[in-house]
Length: 518
Image (cartoon, rainbow, N blue to C red):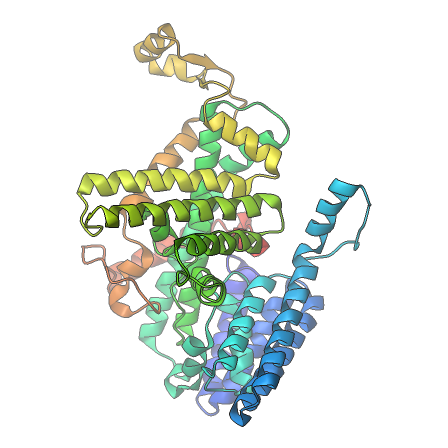
């Protein structure tokens, strides 16, 4: 079931909310069970067959967590360790089978021509998210950090529908205590106002921004995959269109998840914080998919040794972590290369910081122009990475990157020449080519790009606009205090209603969120 669908907005959500708060008046545990059942129904709407996989995963990991905890209380370190290894191995085998088996077999077949196959394997939605969530739970149980083992609360923690399909990656210490609090089960007009506002902003981002600009990205990447030679302008317009499609798609989903959760009185961790404002790649990964970055740091990078074993080992750990993070996003070599590229970016960034520190530079000091240039360089680096992320295969990605590098020349659309008048004639006289651009470039995509660039660089984000109302956990320190800051007033209610109507009237063009495939 999609957040951006009529059945979700006008049927599932109101029924689930009504049942939750009616039951919560008398029996909070029953209300939690109701929300768990509703979340399973939400998941099963896509494919009921895979509800059993999610249910078995919950029961299995809960039982293993109990066994690990009890072994720890008895001082039985061997049983505790064996159970953790067994449970994590089972989780990874299941994830590998559904998500990576065809990828690895295809790679083997390509090299050996063996023709191996497991048949058609359908990737269960959200399997990466609920697997990582539970691996973190098991690891924390091993280290004695888990304090609650109520099965209903655990089931809700894993299945909670606002995060189930595309994140954030939840941590039990953030969520399960909230399910214990009686105030969670009491309806609040403040929660309703804040939650609806954030949900509507996210819905608008997805329906009106991401889906519309994405229509310009698909033809360009499809052309590259089909072997059509692209010019620099075509390739850059396609890459930038996808850059903004992914941004507003994921930002929209993150807002909608936070808003929906707030309706139920539960606060989710922040997962997206204006990443295109980042001044370096380290900063970017502190802002993009923040809960996944946290998981990779805490449960992969640090166990590998982090930065405790010298600079060389630290950089190797960064490369391993990012390569595996890329593979987590998708079963394909393009994702591995994307993760490896970002690992290389991070190594360069850490090395540059280390060099500046040795030279006595104050890393906290930077001019406004210096930060602007750093932001631009980081943005271009990220756009180059998104080409690998989006391309159908390495061949298509290479074709896109060659075109973006200007190796196929720069051709402006021929219909721009008469529009530009004397300027167009002057440019043509000085060597600028005007010609056929395969209908891939027009004023529409150019306008989308410059307008959305201004939005992502200069506008406050949703969490900053509502910072005074604590919309998410672990908010960044900065907040927005300007005239646009949200207040529970009739004016903002009208603005929210206007955004909602615009989005709802366009729901007939609904599309899945891009992170559903990961």
